[in-house]
Amino acid sequence: MAMAIFLNGMERREIRDLTLAMIASGETMNFAGLSKKTTDKHSTGGVGDKITLPLAPLVASFGVAVPQLSGRGLGHTGGTLDKLESIPGWQANISGERMRAILEEVGAVICAAGSGLAPADGKLYALRDITGTVESIPLIASSIMSKKIAEGTSALVLDVKFGSGAFLKDIAQSRELAKTMVALGEDAGVATSALLTNMNVPLGLAIGNANEVRESVEVLAGGGPSDVVALTVALAREMLRHAGQPDADVEAALADGRAMDSWNRMIRAQGGDPTAALPVARETHVVTASRGGVLVEQQALPFGIAAWRLGAGRARKQDSVQHAAGIDLHAKPGDIVSAGQPLFTLSAEEPERFARALEALEGAYRVGNAGDEIVTGGPLIAERIGA
Ligand code: URA
Image (tube, rainbow, N blue to C red):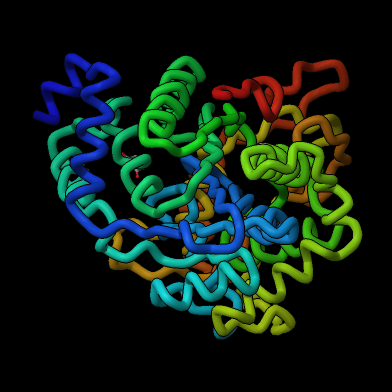
């Protein structure tokens, strides 16, 4: 069946029926009794994509509930739970009752999805994995949306990525996936829209786990890299629009500490200490510019693979991640650099990891001359899809 769908595609009604059947294979959550509106976000994953961390508390600071069931990373894309687990004491596993209580009191919860939501998806995904049928748009759309619809949110914003570091590299395919998921959400009664966003260059300056938490806290403190801020603000506006607050002043909540208060409460509610020091790696290796000029290229995929090889990601589901491992970028495409200036720092627990990470980075960045084309693959936010 998976191969037939892979080869022939599916009609809208067929995708809906498959998705509803996968939802019906397990339990569903229902937040209808909550005193707040619910809205969630899903990203198809990328390199340095930590947006959920500042986004969930930011949206919650407007009195909207964000029930975010997240996963762990596999391969070169990181997982939100892995990032948050670098905070001392923070727990990903909480009961449905506790989740509801935190949504009511704090507004934002980011926790592990139990195996009870859409279990048929897990089985079908395992089959797709060994039959070469993962990359089928109807199957990807139904897989993602079965879990999100079962989660019981009344609105959903999708961050569908394209580019070298994305799950689907080609923007036309990402657009089709986004349109399919938006239609599926609408058919299931969930107000859904999508942003198509660029994943040719790593997002922000931090790729890893603990360092991505640090960067997220900078955004919540009103600073942080401009691309991370821009995407957080755009997705927050979309989510708040669905929650009936189209004019919410999102930037003000980042600047005046409301989003940070919400983050501190969210982390504490799950046992974490937001003031505790985050782990720091035992070993670092700094890569410097061999000549002066302009940084014209920084490819997301090799940087994602390098961070993974440093220990920030896992190859198999059962592996653990090293929270302090990763990459901190010191320059972004378009920045002027001088000879000898640090371009990025690799961090790992074991120095043996550096050679393989550096191998992945060969040809992945380039210092050129003023006036050379800056290779970014277009704007950060390319399109918006949905009502
Ligand atoms: N993520 C999912 O959850 N399912 C897919 O099929 C692909 C990405």
